[in-house]
Every structure is written in C-alpha cells, then in structure tokens.
Amino acid sequence: MPTSVPLHLWKASVGNACTYIPRVDDKVFYFPAGHSELSSSPIDIASEEPPVSVATASTIHCQIVEVQLLADNDTDEAFYRILLQPCPYRGPIFKPSSAVTPPPPPSTMSLSWFSKVLTQSDAHNGGGYSIPRACAESLFPPLNYADDTPLQTLSVTDMHGTVWEFRHIFRGNPKRHLLTTGWSRFVTGKSLTKEDSVVFMKVGVEEELFVGIRRRRRMGELRGRGEVVNAMRKAWAGETFEVTYYPRKGTLEFIVGVDAVERVLRERWAPGVRVKMAVEMEDSRKIWVHGFFIV
Image 1 (tube, rainbow, N blue to C red):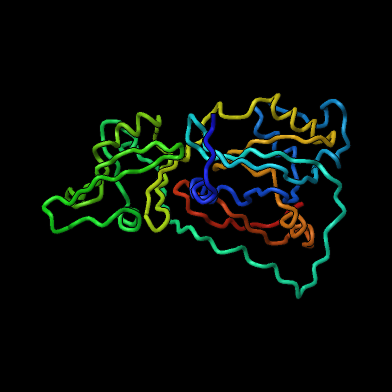
Image 2 (cartoon, helix red, strand yellow; image 1 turned 90 degrees about the vertical axis):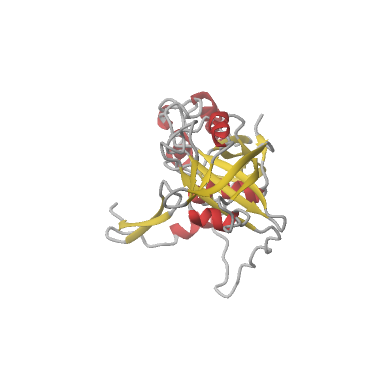
C-alpha cells in the first residue's frame, strides 16, 4: 500500500515536475489524450467504444472530489491519486480587473530541500555519496571543523517513516562532504541506480531531516491500458472516475486548473506569436525554452 505524505514533503519530493497540485473542490480540465500517453499500449480515442464527439473527447470539465498525495511503496516516488466528477462547463467567470485574488495563508512549516542526480560512484553499493557543499551547509547540522576529521551521524526519515542513519564526514584532498557508513545499505534498500535523484529535506524548528527519491524514467513504468481506458470511458459518460499521476521529467500533466486553461484561451494565438515553456533539467533546475507558435 502506498504511504500518505504531507503536502510540504510531497511538493519537495516532486520539485518542478508538477506545476499543478490538486485540491478538493478545484475545477479542472481533464485531457484524455494526455492521459492516453501514459498507457502501456496505444489508445486511439476516435475508435473507442462507445463513440464520442471530438469536442467531448478533447477536454472534460470536472470538479475534484478527493485527493490523495502518496509515496509509492516500491519506488518511493511521490504521486497523486484523485477522484473527479465531470460537470457542465458554463464558460469563464468574469473577474473585474480590480479584483485581487487573496494570497494563500502563509505556511507555518519551514522547509528547505536539495536534490542531486546520482553519479555512477554515488549509486555503487560499495561506495559513498558525494554531498554538494550547498546541501551539506544548508541542511545538515554544522560540523566541528576544528576536529582532525569532522564527522557526525545523521538520522534521516524516508517517505514511509523508516529512519536511516548515515555517517557524514568531511575528508579527502581536496576535502569534500561525504555520506559513508549507511549509504550502501540505503542504495541497496532503495534499488538506486545512476541518474536517479535523492532529495534531502529539512523541516520545522526541530530541523528534522527527510529523504525522497525521484526516479530516472525507465521503460515498463506506464499505466495499464485498461486502467486508462476505464477512466476515459467513465469521464465521457459523466461518471466519477479516478486517475493516478506520477510527476516526473518527460510526462505531461493531463489535469489542468480551469484558471490556467482560460488564461491561455484568452490569448490571441497566431503564427509567429512568441511562446516559452518551463523545462525541468536532470539536476532539478528549471529552465525556460523559447519558441514561436506555428499552427
């Protein structure tokens, strides 16, 4: 069974891969074509039975009735599972230009995090983990650099509540931060491989340490075709349906907030219009790709 994860840890675990985090009662658009791309075998929407119109098939307006933010029991990846109820779309609601959307209440939970893509050396179960200096100095308790060999033991909790202990040491020539004792056990226990990412998080005034994992996308991780088609058919029939989404590099979001869609539709699209798109890099940095609208 997957583990329920608090919102702040879930957001840090997915990083920039998820631009929309669903909330109960949100109005959204469901894009079946985007959902079909996660199927383990191709889905031709036009040929599905019962037949549906192109307009109905392309987007379905829904209200979210249940949200679960979870961590996969096998991979530790953060994902969400939501229930949606299709509902009529009555067009955009006029909002006066002077209207100001109140900001969300400030978070009472302090959180800082750092992620790193694992190298071949990091993922070797007989070695250690080279910690970026920024991560060590911003998240971990300070070392006593007056010692001949500065070191400490870190207790870090994963997304399922299991505590892992690592020895954090500062050594080498040139000197660098390393996780040694305990790291190999973690690599083996989590089946980590090169290009997976490890996310360290520091939470609250107690400065508790947590660890999450972002997996390099591999073949064979798509959803079952039956699961996807069943959700699409229920959506077209106006019935409550369930979707599961793993935010990760290379997968498009197919549940999009109404405000975001309406904002795009208000633009005057024509060939030559400049556009930009946020793209997450392997090291979790977000860059903007610029281009032109063609059709």
